[in-house]
Image 1 (spheres, rainbow, N blue to C red):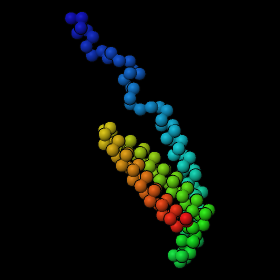
Image 2: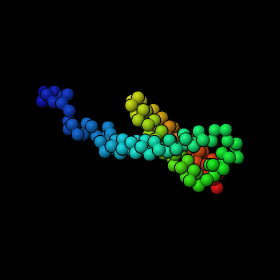
Image 3: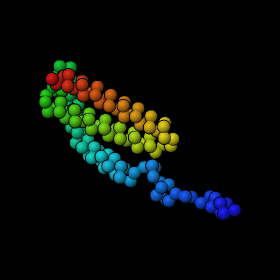
Length: 132
């Protein structure tokens, strides 16, 4: 009879029940990096947009020469790295919000990050191939 009195009473503390359900420290870094990359992308995208507009009507050789200039190549590489990092982080947030089961969420995040890495590497390779 004494055992029946304790049925339904949780034996774990509140802290024990929430362990493994996420870290309060990890989200702040993720949030901060999203803001840093978005602020860094603002001038880079403005530069890129104005540069592409100035190249309107340029020949293929002129465009390749523009990409081959060291400053332009460096800014393009920075834009590629930041844009794909920002995209991967944003996709991760979306997937974490809408996929509630752990394994499908983990697989989707890994696929999204992998796709962003592959696209960033391909874009960076294209710029480096022209610039070097």
